[in-house]
Image 1 (tube, rainbow, N blue to C red):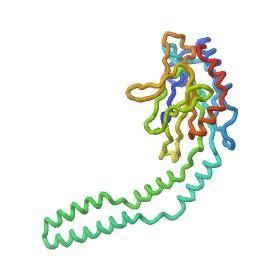
Image 2: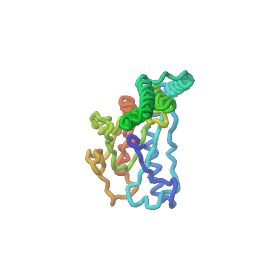
Image 3: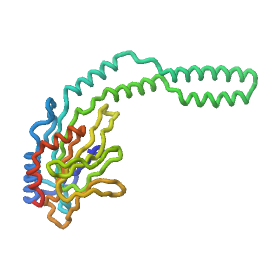
Image 4: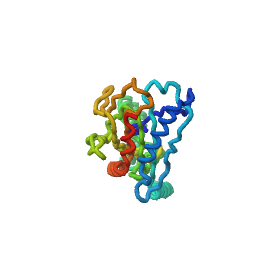
Length: 286
C-alpha cells in the first residue's frame, strides 16, 4: 500500500528465485504469524463486513538472500461498509441514466463568440483586410482552445459527479509488519504527524485520504503504531519515522513491529485501540 498507499515487502516466497526455508525460518514465521493472529481484533467496525483475513501461512520456501537482513513478515485484515458502498453504486447508476445537464453558460458564451469571429473573418476576407483577418484568427484560436467538445464536457461532468458521490469512510485495513525500518510521512497530510500514544506506544498519522479516479473511490490515510527503537527523522529529504536495525543480528530476530490502520482518523484509532499489544511486544528480541 503505498503511502498514501503503504508498500511492504515480505521475505516469504511469492515469485522469483527461492530456496527451501530452514527450520529456524519456519519457526520464525509460525511465531510471528501466531502473534499477529492473537493481536488482531476478532471483528471490525459495527455493521461492516470482513472482506479479508490473512491466513498467516507458514511456507516452506523463502526468497534467496533473505538471510542478508532482518526477515520481514506482514499480515492484514480488511473490512468494508458494504451497505454504504452498494448504496453509492446504485446512486451512480441512477445518475448515469438521467438526462445530462445543459452545457455551462461559460461554454455557451465561448461557442457564440467563436461563431461571431468566424463570421467576422469571412467579412474581412471579402474586404481583403488581411490585418483584420490575422487579428480575428488569433482571437478565434484562443477561444477555440478554451472550448470543450460536448463529449469532453459530458466526461468532465460525469467524473465530477462520480467523485462527489464516491462514499468516504467505507474501507478499513489493519496491516501488521515485523522488521520494517521506515515509514514515510506524505506531503498531502497537513496535520500533526505525531498522535496520542496507543497503549503506551508511539503513534503517527502518515497521510491523508485521496481520491482514485480510475476506481471511483476514496482511499483513507494511515495511522501507524510502532514498537521498538523508532525515531522521527528524514531520509532522502523525506520526513518519517525509522527504526535502527542491527544487520549483524540473526535475520530471524524481531527488531521492530509496526501496525498501520488505513482508515478515517477516528476509526483508525478505534481499531488500533482494540489490538492486543502484549503478543506483539513479546516478539521483540525473539
